[in-house]
Length: 421
Ligand code: LLP
Image (cartoon, rainbow, N blue to C red; front, top):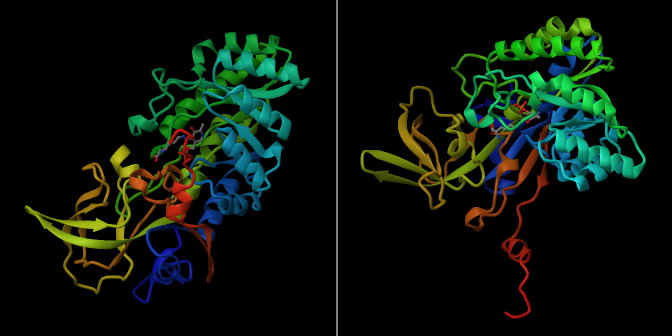
């Protein structure tokens, strides 16, 4: 459920008509709902109630400071994967003890930065990283809490580009070698082994892959404890999928996911961390765009929008489907017609949808891409020197620009000219 609904035929973000934001901000832009972000965070938090737990929002999904502050105020921790994300989390007021540091290629500089500023744990992904972290820790005279990310070789049954838990993926250490690697970690004085980490992929629409992975983690916890490790924390990653269409089968709910965690791991008495990103931010955001032209092609009509693949790359990159809806609701009974929905960028890949059924639209009409809150703005670029589009946050009847559209001068002036020119 989200808070982008029609009221009196006008698409609203909570209680603000989207057209009102368009008048103030121009198109295209991303718009997020505070109520949806809040609701989704609480669903996870409540799903783990009764277990010692921390919901660490995977801020790679949407990392605007205002979004982070909204979630941090609810008690969220953060899952960060770069020095930049760490800095963003701290700037939003998230204390170090609520930040977990993930990622397959952390640099020594990033390690140092997080150790200086405070961190809950590092999720270590390889033996060379373990050695580097140990060296940094010893150099700084500290001991670092770590989990080791295991790769359980489970098929997440999601898009190949976002599956991470199969042995051919670059992530984690093979679970079969875990005992050996944990033994090595225990020998390194700069590291304190506190738990196990696993993340098998994103946009999972069934619970079975989670079950298979978590059962393996439960067995491993018992084995590692027998080996003398004090396993007291389990970081279970993110990955729970969201409905991208109104019609498709609904993915499992956070309550069902929470029940699965309790069932597979609850008896171990560990503190549970989860790292959801998409489910918190995805349906909390829309991308609003204006139709520039409707062009009749051979056997098809192109709806040419002012948003493009540089603003929302998911359709080009993963063939992802995003529902597209008119901002002014079509009158009942209006017959829909197929459009190829495209952006202005000079690539055929700049296609959001083919043969998409929509009510008849003309230049100047507004449309909204639904479910665009996660992996939308954060994956945008300035390709074709198109400015990064603004982000807007709605809160009840209020809205605020939380990232302004840069001017052309601001974009150009980031370049510097060498003295010989
Ligand atoms: N934890 C780790 C270690 C991750 O790698 C990810 C996502 C998450 C948590 C959050 O997963 P989520 O709950 O959002 O599924 N750009 C792609 C998605 C990439 C996901 C990468 N890792 C997309 O647009 O579909």
